[in-house]
Image (cartoon, rainbow over all chains, first blue to last red; front, side):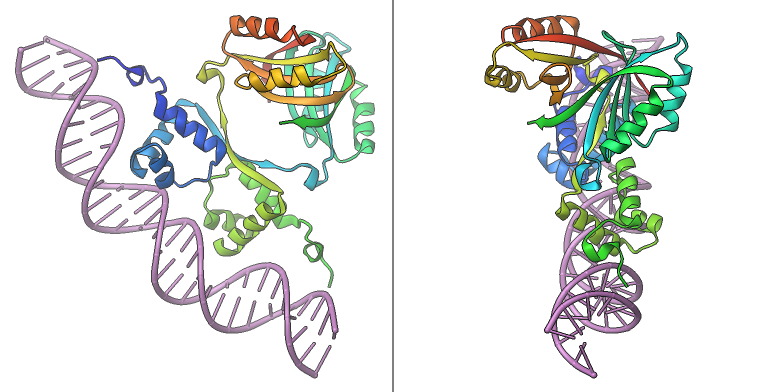
Amino acid sequence: MINERTYNMLDNTDIRILEELSHNSRVTMKELGEKVHMTGQATSARVAKLEDNGVIEGYTIKVNQAKLGCHIHAFITIFTQSLNHRPYLSFIKSQGEYTINNFKISGDGCYLLECRFPSNEHLDQFLTQLNKYANYKLTTVINKME
Amino acid sequence: MINERTYNMLDNTDIRILEELSHNSRVTMKELGEKVHMTGQATSARVAKLEDNGVIEGYTIKVNQAKLGCHIHAFITIFTQSLNHRPYLSFIKSQGEYTINNFKISGDGCYLLECRFPSNEHLDQFLTQLNKYANYKLTTVINKME
DNA sequence: GGGATTTACTTGATTAATGAAAGGACTTAT
DNA sequence: ATAAGTCCTTTCATTAATCAAGTAAATCCC
């Protein structure tokens, strides 16, 4: 009999494990096992396999950035000035503290840069620096809808 | 002596704990404690406090969406057709499977919608439906820069 | 088709982590 | 000065994770 797991695909149990870990990645393997009707040991083996497969890329936390003093969430569409993107990219690397994501995109612009700043002053300073390497269009997040 | 913790602020140890948990949220309290030079028990108490304060909002995993069959990552700038956003918002709620984030924004458009789709066909179908409630501008992610 | 191999799971024993309680050092408030 | 509170450590009981065997089912290969 051929099933999903024959070809290293994910079955329903794996999906439920991923859902549960997305919701709470610190759950014990024993407890996680109870939710998917397996022993902790079997669950642990499944999870290890998901890690090896690269399906689970890592375990992390959701941090309330506002409580850490980072109140400004911005998306910045980047239009590099020169054909060579290197100057922009190395600038972003050097300013890593503010950057959440830097996506290479199709559509308007070359990159979509997602950042967080403590204040408008920090944002202003960042944009001034950025403008040496690229033009930009600023979009700020007012609220995250649930 | 007055220090940060007097006023429920975060000190360096808290910051290091957050960094470490961001990097690996499944680390044991004992091991985490070693990194910040405290016992596991003290570390555990710190983490509990960070949870209570709402600084740590949750524990989650990074999933490789491409390996789950979701190959298309899109940002969709939304321009609602009517003054009333309700129809758009309830459409997004009903199509929640594709939506990662829906940000209310300043700048171009009313919302910035972040989505993932298994295929262009799914994206096409989604956009067709979406167009009943809003105009849009599509930006697709080619690559995520590291 | 049939024996060898692989895979996925269980059970049981060992090792490690967690949680609770008690106590000490230091700070703050009265 | 003293009482209360905070934050940490140590110790100990409980609980979970890990490791090693063992089993059953599916697959591979001739």
